[in-house]
Length: 143
Image (tube, rainbow, N blue to C red):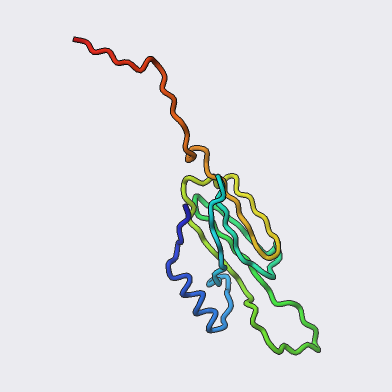
């Protein structure tokens, strides 16, 4: 029910990781995600450790879900000398094309322990349903 919008995104993430560059608003870094179905709900979980919930932006336009987040460097006093800095900083973004069978009007978002979890219900019109037969079930032939 989900579709990746950019097949080269994972390669970009690896190149950014190896080169040590951080994401910018014009070229954000990719954020890792998991997507799975849980009953009548699709769940998408994004890893955003160290990002405050206020720095996360979630938008849906038609069936395109966009999640953007920014992790800024922590404030350091003048007497602090950085010895090692491996945690990525900057802007992170992910776009996911949602299927027409998902109800984008009822998306729920939760943020806990650095994981943004979106729950998207399956639209009622997409759920399987029984069709009942009315009438006697007999056909009459004229002739």
